[in-house]
Amino acid sequence: MTDVADKSGSRTTRDQGGSQGKARSKARVEEDAEPRAENDGRELAVREGGAEPATQDSGGGGLLGRIGRVSNSAFNVTREIGGSAQRLTQQFVSEAGHLVDVALTTETAPRVVVHGEVVEELPERERIETPATTAEELRRAGERLLAQSAEPAGADAPHPAYPHVLEQLCPDEARVLRLLFTDGAQPAIDVRTNRPFGVGAETVAAGVTMIPEVAGCRNPDRIAEYLGNLHRLGLIWFSKEQVEVRRYELLQVQPQLIDAISRAGRYAKTVRRRIEITPFGRDFYGTCFPKP
Image (cartoon, rainbow, N blue to C red; front, top):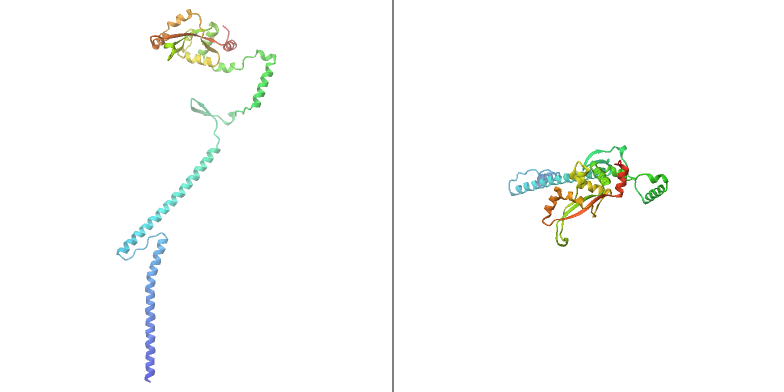
């Protein structure tokens, strides 16, 4: 009887000891699970871009943890800003390229420019396209001119340049041309500085003449422009030959010539010339203007 009771008590004791061991193992597992769950929660929060939850530890490790969390947050914000800036830059480049393509494919209307300012734009119906001139077209035009020269009716026709020349003359220039056509060549004097052998000599006044006063020009101060334009059109030329000597006497006492001689210095040199109409200018005046 005693052995049976001892065996029963031993079994009961082993069962109680086993139950207590299981309970302690379960408690240990639960205690180990709590820190693991807490660490998993922290890692999940860091991966999602959030801040790691605060811990109750107030020692040195807690301060380093806070610094790490702040650094992670700043890095995440910087990465988002950089991504946004890159997307904006790509969009800007795309829009700029589109605008350039539109500008290259857009045709602008021809404009009328006067003295460097745009005054109007020509409508579509008034645009004149300049035809491309080739060597073959020029050759055909030359053949037509030669064919017209053989026709008797073309001999009496005026020069085709006369209308264009007439459009480029002002009223005072027409008066100058009339004077040269009716009265012949007019005297002119150049004033130069006098240097030994002509080395270093300079022209102080060129083409001093009384043409504007004799012709009755409204703007005599612009005589240099008038003579230059008439010479450009081939209507007059400046000859080195002289007219009659007595015709220079009146010119030598004119104020503009006296002033030029005083500016040239003590030993001023005068060169006598003349201005006359060309054969082309004489025919042009006889064709386009009434004869006196």
